[in-house]
Length: 352
Image (cartoon, rainbow, N blue to C red):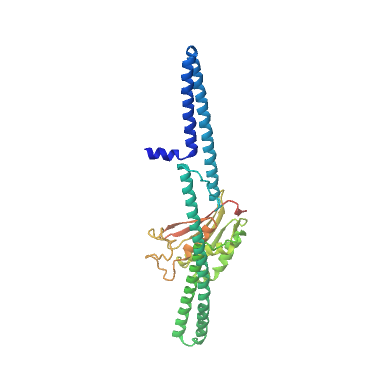
């Protein structure tokens, strides 16, 4: 108990307040004793007057103390807000002693620790960015060479059906490797925070038309239909190439899980709060067991008949959508089809 009292009195401002209160009590006691001794007939009046003066003095001393404490706390809050806003040099003055200054010192220590973590994270991201760049350059050369060799073999195997079949299979596997590598690099860049979205106003209808054109050969070959539905005047502030890649990954996923005669529909609309893009198919649907896991990397359903997928398309699409400030959700019924919903809140980044 005595130790805690000593810690409280270590603060010179609290000690000064206690000294003022004690002095006021001492002064009142001496004044009252003098009045009773020298003015016994009017003692009650003067004692009452002295008590009033003591109360006024104590009230003034407490007001001054708490006013100073409030100013100090407002200054501390201002420094904390400045740090939250991005000022790494923000600190709370804590040159005095006492519990409140110990708290301020701990806050300053926490800020220093956080700054150190931020610096370490920045160095780690820089290292990861450089590593990703090195891996990218190292892989491009052998993949390009293998594609060239495979093309030469394809030309030489025209009259050798068995060899031609293996060359064709080799080409498919090379494409899978290249897609895997590219998707891994893209996701790693998102994880490292090195992707910068270069946003510009883009017409949603025009982007969806371009995506439909990119898949026109495949849909024609597989006997499937792609339908576009939406307002042609809606514009959206986005990174065109990245957003189109996200939608194309979802369209590819839809085509992978549909059969001949099925369709994939892309519909977009603007509401009061968001731009919504829906990619819907009437294919096989997603098993309820898988819905929670489909955005996890390399996840493969035990119910899936797709033996070529590598489980990176949907996670990459989500990363791109979230980098635009949006979100993605899915609604699916087994045997009836799937709908992916993309939501982009309307702030300053949505036009039209």
